[in-house]
Amino acid sequence: MKIRLRPAHPGDREAVLAIVGRPDVSATLILDPASSAQRYVETGLRGSSGALYVYVRNGEIIGGGKLENASFSYFVHPDFQGRGHGKAIAGRLLSLLLRRCPAGPVLLTIRRDNSASRSIAEYLGFRFAGADGLSPHCLHFERAAETDIGRAAGVLSPDRPRRRPADRLR
Picture (cartoon, rainbow, N blue to C red):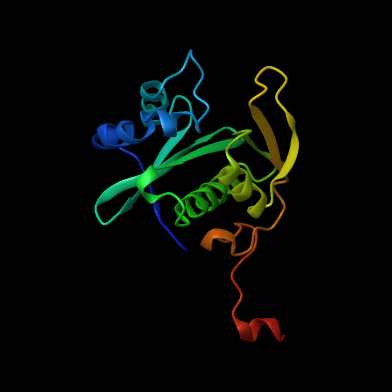
């Protein structure tokens, strides 16, 4: 599934909050007690703690994510989970992040009980890097930036141009 993410704007605030403010979604974003859905959205809109993106389908925001330094987080409205949207959003965010930070590793922190996100991370080339000593319910995954994700989730790695079949014969 190939998707298009767009930068979020202030008019998206309420729709994004309606998704990330849900307990079943905020838990997957690993929002700690000092943080909140409101803070996640506000800092993303201001760009003070990463850039917030949204995925709009049929005029409705159904998911999105946030780029932060050498990591990203993503969310999908529960009504749309299990249909490949999370994999597509994560793949697109990874591609955007690799354009911004092509040299270093990309990191993900995933709740131990979030098997769907763990599968997506592995699909995108992330490898288990260890458990979090301070938060035992969290696992860390790492992916070398130079690893080519090819056509994973419908995106191309920025360092690998698309080749036409005739080019492969040369």
